[in-house]
Every structure is written in structure tokens, then in C-alpha cells.
Image 1 (cartoon, rainbow, N blue to C red):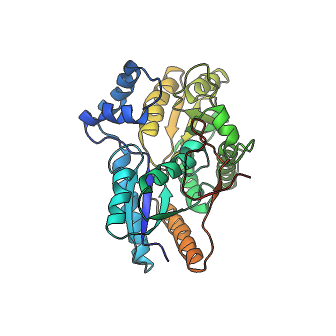
Image 2 (tube, rainbow, N blue to C red):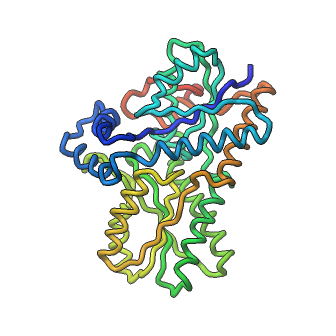
Image 3 (tube, one colour):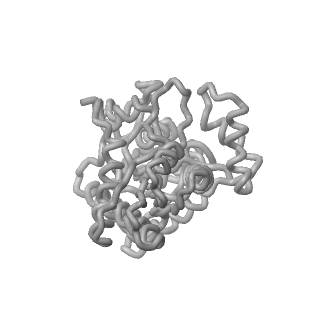
Length: 346
């Protein structure tokens, strides 16, 4: 039986000021996060009118995917659901089941392998589908696809050349969301560190294309943002703000930031980079330019639909969809939590 709907799955975000704290409490439920910390983070949203930019970006991507599928002759609906805020997966999946949907294909807005970027979404989908007759398959990680790399390269090239001629005191810094070191170690399987490796591969492809286009060598770094764990827990680094200070000490004058860890300009980009990192750069005298994200770039949308078409063709041929091993990106808190699209541990 072929798929009867696509579900775009994302993190979620508030769209009204009164929803900001309830959203943050839901995100951090079960973790010892003090209320004053949530109140401080809430100010990031209030500074933008009490709403996250992510919901509108998800609507735009959903509509772009649906339009491209129609253009290619596919009569299949695209829905959107979130882990942490409305429309919640726990509401959407039972509603789809009640409407007669039985085979769903999920596509996440997270492009890289990690627990928080892959398995946690699959766990949420399993929980949302519990008690229904819905079966869920998935689109595999797509960060290394041309459809993702090309839009990021174009954005980097535009930012890089927009600064004018490179005097030799310029650095290209790729940025992604920090995660605990232990989670990074287990991403893609025990000891594989696929989360870090994939980011470095994406960065390397962009740099090689930029060097080919400009005819000059490019010095680059990989940095992290949005750390949220306790200070005694090791997380991936360096933090982008710390790195900017170090670069200033090395007499770097210009920095292009490329947020390759994110598919759109959501809160970690517009606050952590456009606000905090921009202020950190100004404080140490660095001219900072932030490159764009993939968003709804036509090449990105086309590449995702290529993935969807390939999975539809595979389903029609009786080929199983992508399955992650149970010990790939394991749940560090509750290892036995069920997840969709899973196979036994390696």
C-alpha cells in the first residue's frame, strides 16, 4: 500500500506572547531547568513580538513541497506537525488516522543524524501513532544532498563576495546547534560521531566550491551555538561567541557566518547569531555577515521532493524505507522508548 500523506515534522514554536512560557515549559518538561532561566529565554521571543519565526517557515516549506509535488503530477497531501507546539503530532496523527490515512511518510526539518535531530522525532511519531492503525515511514537525513549543500553555498558565496576583496583577514565560520558530547559520540551509531562528521563534510563541500569560484584559499572553522545543558556536562564547542573573541586576538577582521546546522532562520539563528553573535563581533571589532539558510530555496525544495519520489518508488517496488538501528543515536534518558522506522541494534 502506497503512502497517502506526507507529514512535515518540526520542533514547534509559539505564535503568541501568552504561549511563550507554556511552550518553553513543554520543551523542558522533566528537566531541572529553573523558572528564572525560562523567563530569561522567553525574553528572546518577546523581543520579536512574542512569536517564533519557525511556524511561518514550516507553513512556507509545506506549501512549497505540496506545490512541487503537484507540479510533478503527485496527488498527495502534505501536512505539518510539531513535537512541542501546535499543531502537535499527538493531535495530528490521530486526526489523520480518523480521516482514513494509513501510510504516512515523515520528513523532518532536521537534516543531520543525532538523538535530538532524528530518533527523538521518531519516538514522538511512535507515541502519536500509538493506538491507531497508522504506519509511518521516513525520509532519511539529507544534509549531504546537493539540494541542501547548493543553497547554502550560494548564500555563503553571496555573503563572501558582498564583503569585497579578501585582504587575508577574513574567516568563514560554519555554525550549528551544540549537543552533549556523549550524544555526539553516539550519533550514527556507537563511536561514529556522525553529527560532527556530517557538518564537516557539508562545510568542506561549500569551501571547495567557494575556493573554486573565487580562486583563493578559504580558512574556515566549525562552531556551535545554543548550549543549554548544565556546566558540568561536556557539550560540543567552541561556542560561536568564544570563537569570535579568539579570532579577534588572531587579528581576523571579517567573518562570514553560515548556519549550516539549520534549515531556516528560526530562533537559534535570529537570536543566537543575528543578535548575540552580532553583538559579540561588534564588541571585538569584527565585521560580521551572516549567510542565509536553505529555507524554501527552489533547489532545496526540489531535492526534498526528489527524496519523496524515490521513497514512493521504493515503496511501490516493495523496498523497505530507511531504518535506524536501535543503538543509532540512542535515547540517553530512556533507552527502550519505541520509535518508528527502527531495526534491531547492530
